[in-house]
Image 1 (cartoon, rainbow, N blue to C red):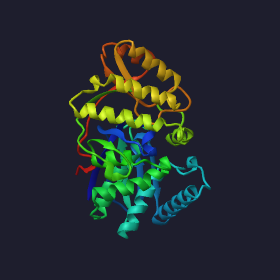
Image 2 (cartoon, rainbow, N blue to C red):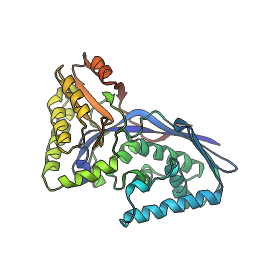
Image 3 (tube, rainbow, N blue to C red):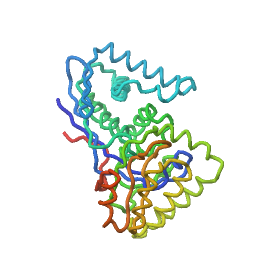
Image 4 (tube, one colour):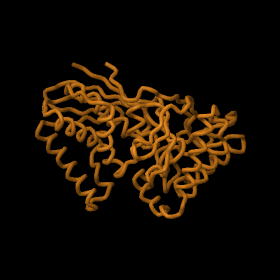
Amino acid sequence: MDILSQSPAKLILSGEHAVVYGSPALAVAVNRYAKCRCNEAESYQIKLTDLAITCSYSEPELTGSYQEICQRLEQFEAGKLPISDLVQSPTDIIVYTIGLLNDLSGSQTALQIEISSTIPISCGLGSSAAIGLAALKSISSIRNLDITNEQLFELSLKIEKLTHGNPSGVDSYLCTYGGAVRFQRPMDSVEQSIGIQNFTLVNTGKPESSTADSVENCRKFADTGIWDSFTDLTERFIAKLNGGSSLDDCLDEIKENHQLLIDIEVVPQKVQDFISDISFAGNAAKICGAGSLTGDAAGMVLIAGNQYALFDSASEYGYEILQVNTDNEGTVRCE
């Protein structure tokens, strides 16, 4: 039996970093996908197509690797291991996913797993959550586990600890359920069906610092009141969209969000310069992920407004333009 599943990317339109501290975020799933093809095999094989990596494991080897990952997580949660040491191989996320589902099913039947993705890695689009969820869906299906979306979400949060340490849950939620939502912890504060569909993004490249590093650096702003500013902004942004406004009607909110992100030190100077340049042409822009503490790149930038000069500016800075739409399905089995 051959099973294919997919999970979408996600964007945070407002509330980056603040969502970790209990503020709301405006977030949307978009039509870039991680896919997982899975079938039973004689031995475990994990193929990461986009990275040209293939690893094979006997059952004892895979179990041993899973147990080592679990031990590292325990050490991290006890404060004895830095987050940078949690993932030691590109296949660790898949090994950990297999182990979690083997524990649930009691099955040790070997699997051949192939991962492919159209989601840029480490650019604010939730690639690790999408990859983990696509694998969860395919492996649980082949293991005959009747797993609900709520269970998929909870399992995804466990997997996301490997890459983010203390995930807010927004990536896992959007990649699981799809749509556009007001997201806030606890989960009963999530509100569905915010009316936004089409987006223009500019990919400034992979950030030099990790999401975990950016999140850790933001802890120093915990007592400054800036998260309240993010909350007020996000609520106004959502209210305008729910009132029928388009993103192009929300230029002031996008510009305000951009300034707040500069204030918490996650927008590199080169990206600030790019946003300043296109703002003179009647646009507004902001990063859509964790950003970066160092370097020149910050992942995805959301663009709104008069975009006639955007292509020239993006080309001048060496940036790629992407057009994306809302995904309303979330993680699904394709075959």
